[in-house]
Image 1 (cartoon, rainbow, N blue to C red):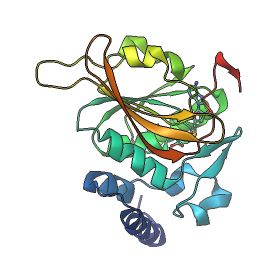
Image 2 (cartoon, protein in one colour):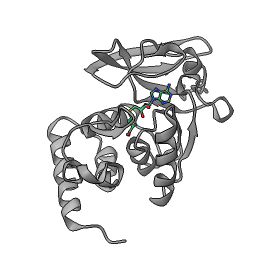
Image 3 (cartoon, helix red, strand yellow):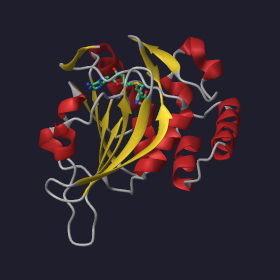
Image 4 (tube, rainbow, N blue to C red):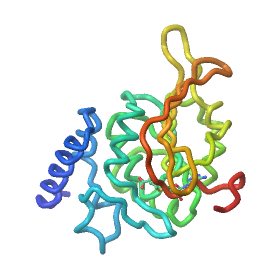
Length: 222
Ligand code: SAM
């Protein structure tokens, strides 16, 4: 199916805007330049699909702002073929960007209505992404270990089960890494964690963001 030229132009402008805002990873910018964000938003919001803003996707959830998607993707920097677990499938847009970068993507969504809408959408757009309905804070044990985990909702703490599903380091190769916004309801610090050994993890706090909260048993229903 040929894409409307106006969307291509808007997407190219969005890529330039992200570049101006500090995104430097060309693989990320290429992926943002390829994924058709307008396919992941409501028909009524099509005209806003390529503005750098979060948009509602129903069920009190949002598709993240493109800058946030680019920032998390740049921080995680998945290499082609790496196994990446996303927590919070939502619209499927972030998962599509990671897949476009060549990663093998697994994604978990807690809200059944979104899972049921997004799984067939990703398939219809020919993204080979394994989706699952459930509590992402528990990770995906049977598919672990992962080279990377990306959490796209705000967490109060870093879930231990996710840390345990990061790949262990092997020789000179560092262990798996995680990008997760950690904080309270109003603000979270983007945190980058690398597994250094069985029980050893390094973490760095980056910039402040504001995400919808991670839902689950351990946080009540929030
Ligand atoms: N990555 C999404 C995208 O590209 O559209 C953005 C998603 S939105 C900011 C956060 C998502 O995380 C919501 O869809 C929400 O339902 C989901 N979520 C919240 N808590 C979750 C949990 N414990 N496990 C899995 N998904 C969760």
